Image (cartoon, rainbow, N blue to C red):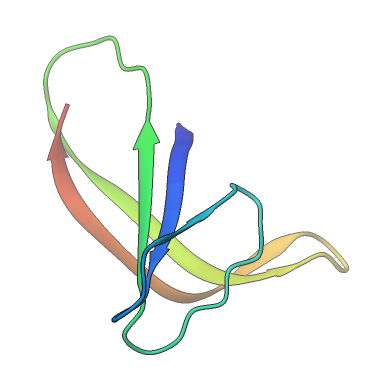
Length: 76
């Protein structure tokens, strides 16, 4: 899966584009919009696309502390 664009939408302010990998700070009322693309070659099916926001820890091993997660059903 490839992230094609990321933007932060703040109420009363224009949307701000963000580069993939850049640190993003959100506050209550903000919307984070992430567009993704992926290649799938197979039979049509329904699946769940999940996303998570968290804190990346690097020591002693790399792991993500999930603070918020959600998913939506998509047809591929």
